[in-house]
Each structure stands twice: as C-alpha cells, then as structure tokens.
Amino acid sequence: MRTRTLVITGLLVAFLIAGVGSFYASSHPDGLEYVAGKTGFLDSAEDSPASDSPFANYETAGVDDERLGGGLAGVVGVLVTLLLAGGLAFAVRRRTPAEAER
Amino acid sequence: MHVPDGFLDAPTSIATGVVAAGGVAFALRKARTELDDRTAPMAGLVAAFIFAGQMINFPVGAGTSGHLLGGALAAVLVGPWTGALCISVVLLVQALFMADGGITALGTNIVLMGLVGCFSGYLVFRLVAAALPKRLTSIAPAAAVGALLSVPIAATVFTLLFAVGGTAPVNTGDVLVAMLGWHVVIGIGEAVVTGLVVASVVAVRPDLVHGARTLVPAAELEIRTARPTTRPTTSPTTSPTSTGGAA
Image (tube, rainbow over all chains, first blue to last red; front, side):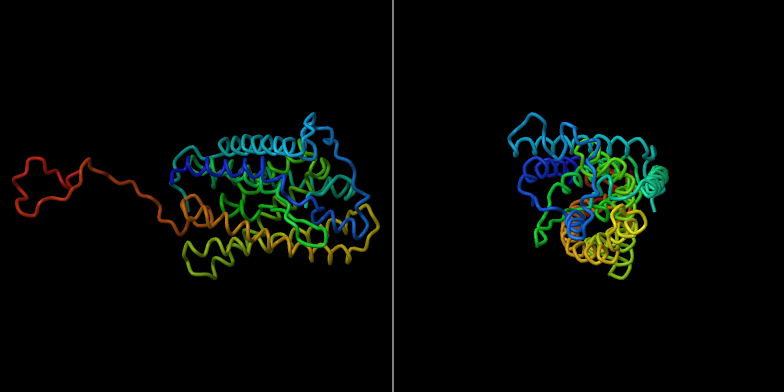
C-alpha cells in the first residue's frame, strides 16, 4: 500500500470516528472525573478559560442539533490537529533520506 | 484523564508546566532522529487519529467511561519523541478549542498523557518485544501490553501530583485505590485499540512502524532494467537485444 493511500485511509477513518462515531460514545464521566466525584474533589474543578470557545465541550455554538454540532466539532478538531502535528513533523524532520536510520 | 483547572494548586501546575515545556522542547530536538520525508505524514495522521479516538468514551461499568489516551500507540507507530509531540498537539487543541482539560492544567496533562503515557508505554513495549520472538507478529501484542500498563502508570502519577498539590483535602490512599482500579479496566480498552491499530499498520506497511523498524530490512537501492533479464539458454550470444544483467 502506498504511503499516500495509507494516510488518506487513516484520515478518513479519523474523520468518520470524530464526525459520526463520537455521537455514540458513552456520556458517562471518565475515570478521573468519576474518581473525583466519588472521593470528593470534583468540586475543586474550575471552568476552563476556553469554555466560551465555539467548540467548547465538543459542541458547536449556534448548532442546536447534538449530532451535527458534535460531529462538526470533531471534524474541526481532527483537521486542526492534523495541520498542527503534520506541520510540526515536516518542520523538524531530517531533510535527507533516511540513511542514518538504525 | 484530562485534568481540569483547579484540581492542582498553582505551584504544582507551574512545576508540571515547566517539566512539560522542557520535555516538549527536548522532544522537538530528538524527534528529528525519528522523522524524515517518509514518516512525517504518519505523525500528522497519528495525532489526528488519536484526537478522534479520544472522543470515543467506552463504558467501563458503574456509570464510568474511559477513552484512548494514545501514548503507547503513538510511541510505537512514530517513535516516543514524535509520539509525545503528537499527544501534546492533541492536548493543546483540546484545551484551547474544546475546553477539554484546563489551560493552567495543560502542563499537567502533557506530563501525564504525553510524556508519561508515551514513554512508559514505549518502555514496556520494548521490554515485551525483546522477550517475544523477533517477528512482525510480536509488535502488536507488545504494543498492547505497553498500552495496558501505561494507563494505570499515568493514573498513579496523577495521584502523586494530587498528593503533592491537590487543592481538596482528600485522602491520597483513597484516590490511589480508586484511580488504579478504574484505570486498569480502562487500560484493557487502551490495549485492545492499540493492538488492533498497530496490527493493521504492521499488516500493510511495517516499514512505517517505528517499533518494527529493526525487523524490516532497509530497502536498498537497486538498478532495474527495462525488461526482464531472463535470457534464452540456447543461444546466449546471438540475440542482439540481450542486455541481460549488464546494467
């Protein structure tokens, strides 16, 4: 399989998971939040300064439909992550072919 | 395991922020040894995939859920330094855009899931891989064990930070027992996802899997002729077109 095919297939899977699959994720608190609630330190959590971001809590401001808003937030998140991490990787990579690979 | 603002006090958050910044700066230098034109696209893919994977909370019972952390997965696929950078980018996007994990807690989250998650997962992976037969089929199981252990290890490190700088007066022992118990179970989910994803990539392109690079012979440059070099055995000298092997 060509690298391009692999990367595009993987990205499609990621967009599908974030854009569609995430709607079906469990809405129970995660391990840390649950433990914090049970042992009594959940109330020490503060609202994030980013909680007025248009995609805060994986919702989309102005989109009332939960499925659509959550999917949009997921797709935007995957895209921004891809651009940042991919750009970073290309910026720090070795420019010569992998001759020194161990 | 995204720590919100407020769980840890300011000195602890500043300390983890310094450790995270130092770790990321060091990783930026070391990732150079792992990244080239071939593997750089994988880093983008791995980060994007882990962002997506972290959106899928799976139930682990009693009204609790867990999701992929991705440290071991990233470390095995693209190398621990690049993996730590990938996780850090995911955490940055989540903190800034999704309000998932705090802003003052970003350093804590990078330490827990980026540095501890990647390097504990990778260390266990290397130990298990060294004990298994040197075959490509050993890579995914070793990665799964690394993933399995990386989650309770990160949960333990959180508890240590909480013991030092927790803002609420809660018994550390209670927190440790509860954190370990749940995160061992969450680690099983982490192991399953990591094992499946690593096995899939190993199946199609083992040469792009950092953790399998010693098992894949490096592709050497070869000179290929335009046509097959099978020559007729009957008259090796008469054919004018025969250039077989000469190239």
